[in-house]
Structure formats: structure tokens, C-alpha cells
Length: 290
Image 1 (cartoon, rainbow, N blue to C red):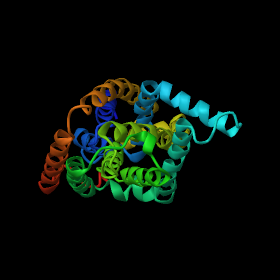
Image 2: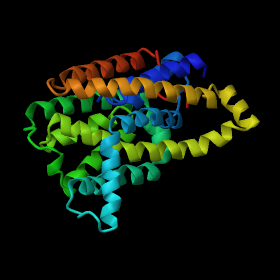
Image 3: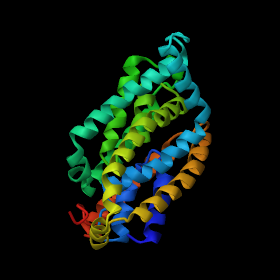
Image 4: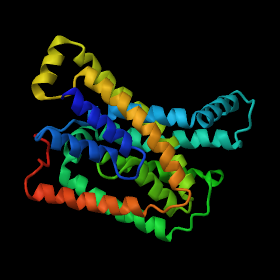
């Protein structure tokens, strides 16, 4: 993978991570289009997501530090467990369990089998339509102060669906939130907070497996021969994803105050159909050369 390709994929990751359109699907497809027959890989995607989640940390810094601080104070008995921030801390932990467990249990399928582009195209269309229905019919009255244990678990299960490229972490979680009656802003806010532990755990786990290999001469040679990203390409893509991602999250949180998700629904359906067309005419390899 060249540095130009790494920059492009970093831009793609940053532009799509927080929008309900599936960043993993876009990185997968754009990587395939730039280098036919080569899938950037689930590990590459997980690692560069560290950049976009760092943008979440900075954007929600006051909220995150307040929640963590009160959560630890509650453990020490200095703050009641009924405090909204303490409850939010527990619910984020609870909601992170499904994706962590399923990610470990089905790691091989996630890294290979589920990256089939026919699955990606189908998920783009199916979950795009589901997002549109939820945005249209849901009452959207609840805020995060009304978040319950049941809702936290359902949010977590919806996030776990994003292990399948094409579903979208934010899209799946926001859709679940809307169907449970939460406002667009509340569903999006919780989706971003819920993603932080899951994405950092996944990215650091993959980095711990991939980076030591890339630091060796043999590892660099194997990666170069296979067209896989070098350590420097990973760093560049991650930094670019951070910068672009921060700008996107600022824009996204502003537009959902007054606009529906219709533009994203239309985009997902069209993107899914275009991808099916590319697959039909053999322009892209559904398995990325696997």
C-alpha cells in the first residue's frame, strides 16, 4: 500500500466513521477499487479507527472525563450510584459487552468471510431502509436521562451488528435508539460514547498483533510482497482519519438537530445498488483476492 493510498483511506475512514453509512464498507470498497483484488483488511480498518475515536474523545472530552470521574467516585462511595453520570458509565460498560464477546468469538469470520462484498452491499441497502423507517415512524421523545438497563443492552446488541461491514456502527446504534423512542441527538450521542471502549479495545488488540510483526524485517517484506500496509502507512492513515473525523463529527452533530436521516438513507441504498452493479460486471472482487 502506497502512502497516497493510505491518505485516501484515512480520508474515507474519517468522512464515514460517524455518519450512518458504514466506514468499514467504504474502506473495504475504496481499497478494492484502488488496488483490485486486495482487501485492506479488518486489522487495517480496526487500527485506523483509533484515529476517529480519538476525535470522539476530544469532542466529548468534558462528558467522558465527568462520567469516568463520577463512576470511580461512586465505587469509592463518594457519589450515589443513582447519579446520571454514574449510570451512564455502567450502561456504556454494559452496552460494550456484546460487541466484545461476539468480536472475539467470531474473529475469523469477521476478518474474512463477512467481508464478502455481496454481504456488504446487502447490508448497506437493508439497514439503510431500516434507518429510514425508524427515522420516519419513531416517536423520538426520550433523552439519555431516561436510558434504562434494557435499552443499554439493546443499544449494545445493535452496535455488535456493525461487526458486519455495511451495517455501520453509528447507523445500527442510532437506528436502535430511534426505534426505542430516543431523539436523533440522544441516539447519536450515545452511539458515539458507546463506540469509544469497543473501538479502542479492537484497535489496540489488532495493533498489538500487527505492529510487532511490521517492526521486523521479515514482517515488512511479507507486507510489501502482499501489498499490505506498512507501519508508516498505518500511522499516516490513522492521523488523517483523526483530522477528518473531528471535522465530520462537528458537522454531523449540528445537522441532525434540524434534519432527518433521509440523505443518508438514500446514499446507502444507492451505494449498495452501485456496489451490486460493480460486482455483477466483475469490476470488483467480492472476496478481495482471498
